Image (cartoon, rainbow, N blue to C red; front, side):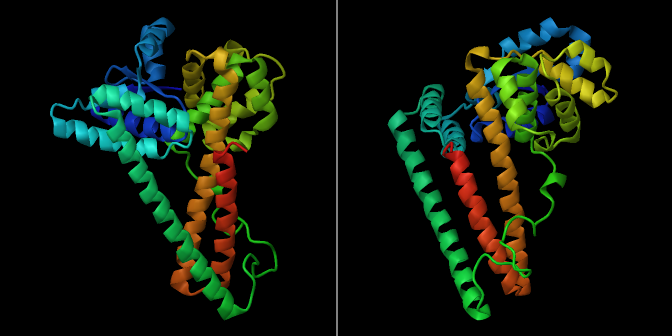
Length: 319
């Protein structure tokens, strides 16, 4: 996945946020810098597609980009950069990707690989203990509430099974920068055609695309039975935003040799983000139920959270 950003301070900050989120979701990222005041659409209109392709060829991987954005000048700077990067590595589920990133950090910052590995293990152990404590607290609250009400966990007031229905409508949420990038990636897969594109048509629906402009494009592209004609499609799009997005994804090179894996990464990232958003919403419901003393709702939402956590764990395990 390419992230192209405006070369000013705000653009660099936005690129950092989007890239880090994508890396945490398991997506391989390269970052391209555009001149200050340019976005992919305006850059292509002013300089042409070939110039954009050349910018993408000069793009940096995630770690090189972060180090280039804030070059460490002292040993203390290198230590801070390494610790910040370890925060990202600690969230990566795939052990091979995490290991390769550690190797890259060690080489880029001239830090002993063994020291980085030990620091990473310490962070993960601390994070695991925090999760266990949080689960114990939730279980204790649910048990206490169940004893007080005499009702079983996982039943709502109307007698139904607890689920995500009580929380806010997740379809109304705003897509994160990482989700936007993953959704654009799937549209690029559809443009590339072939087996991966067919898989996207079979497994994804327009409603999986949270951003309205991307959803509108997905509705058109998922309905195609063969290869997508970019020229014909762009002529039918009235929205300037939609045309800009289609132009942007049409010039990004697609890795055909790893098409299935790329497709896996994008679909997995979108599905994980949807469940993570549901979990965040349920957590807010739990907090509200605790503050208001609504024990029945608390039981239902704790049960819902446990089910969502189970589904998220399965997705992260690749099931």
